[in-house]
Length: 244
Ligand SMILES: [Zn+2]
Image (cartoon, rainbow, N blue to C red; front, top):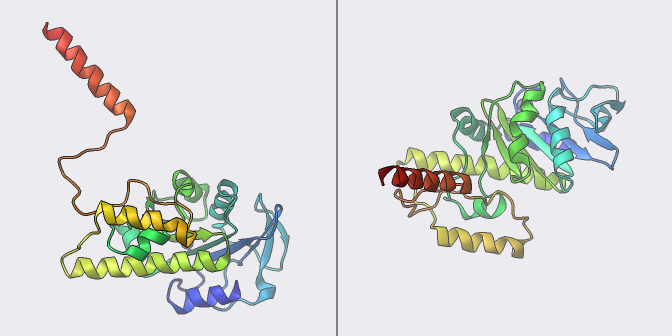
């Protein structure tokens, strides 16, 4: 955790004392980084152990005020054993602009993360933060937090860090292609092949929902839920009856 904290700080993914890292130790305990300490300057004795209600079990320091978001992720995702939260500038810029990382411009992003959605804003340090990500946690392994930062998680700490790294790198590439004024998107066919390759790479099938924007997306083509389609058919039938 101290090494990953240094990586986050040295790469500029966190400023000052921002960000937090945690690891699920067992069914009862979580090891977490402390609040009010730079993630680049942590020593093992600074770490805090809490239970799944967020109550401190041991440690001289206190856990982060954003720990509620970690607790929610651990509760919802038994497969997750480590979480990184940081404010990397480019991905956070996307989050602050309300723009998801959902354009199929990089094979690597499609394979490792699929699309990275933007969670609605929630005041940091309050239950609002966890509530904002709640609808997205099940189907995504990295989430942009509106006007705030990024949270990434996985089966181990290195994977959680790499997912943070991939999100930031993809945001940088996305930004450069936006600055160049042109984005060539992968086709649906290309994306389907990459998603099929995930199982070969041992990547869990997360984040691959219809949110990935591919080339050749037909503007005349729309997507409806079954309820919306039923309502449209019902409406048309009613109109037809009233005209008879
Ligand atoms: Zn934060």
